[in-house]
Length: 421
Image 1 (cartoon, helix red, strand yellow):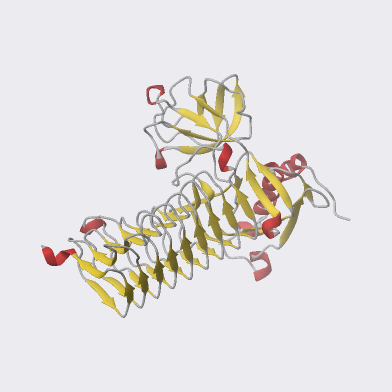
Image 2 (cartoon, one colour):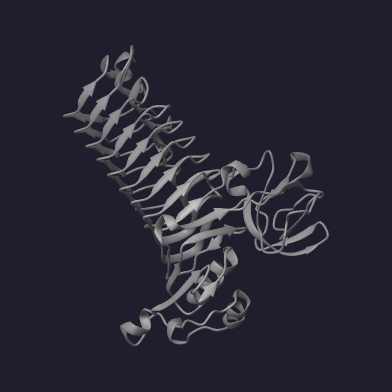
């Protein structure tokens, strides 16, 4: 019979314990190199019994501290009042749709004092609903993106709360600075060689406001390298479904992202060599897939981007040397695929778009904007209905574009605005 540990006992075991063998980069043999710890978390009959993020984090930290292994989460709904923070070398494994990590409802307050750059604390007008151990997002009406933070509340004194991370900007009362209990349901900061598989994220969108995709998503990586997300569902998150920033060699495989308030899948900020394969991004408010800034060497293949509120796939700032192949892109309100209007140094060069199927994405299937070069459009099916529809539109500042062996069904197959200059 398995021994049942409380989260508090598990956390106490972790303090200042590190395996000397795992501290070496060149271990004596392969067994020392690959720990095989396996800890179960569940609502009954598990190594750690619990129903919220604390039980999950206790297991994650225990396995991560000892060098890696598996945290297996049993069926049930787990209420998330802070992110589950991934650790290097750990596989997080659920029971598919039966394992649900659900974001708690948000609490929000304006700040009662300016939050200064580098300060690891904020003072809020109303501390009700902000508890020690909860996740919190600090921003202003003017400051967004990477200038905001997500952190954990570590201590409280009245309306004064200390945080696990310093503020990344001056958060001024004059700019209506605020704190809100928004955070990624799963986050991976500064870790590597980890997996997230076979589980469901419920973003509880109806009870949470929107967080930007540079700091939050249902599953979010920041400098999380060689991470794999497989057979997961993210639904109804109040931002992007899956976002990874400054994270290299990430794989997103056979996942579903649906009905999120932001985009579906969002690689960005210099993430290199990503593989996104076999995924479905549907009915999200913004783009189905958003190449953010400086995403290079990615392979996006065999996915479905359908029914999203903006563009099926958006490509832009320095997003060069990417392959987009064998995807289905359909019924997206803002168009099928768009190269955003960047100048030559910042444009998305050497994009190969091959073997894709585009249907019913408004009046334009593909729009190649900006001063891009080296674009290859080959072996695609592009169908656009309605008057004035265009299969491929090439912007006036685009450079070389190779268009070969496409089946285009539109009122105008190709509109090349370069020819009118």
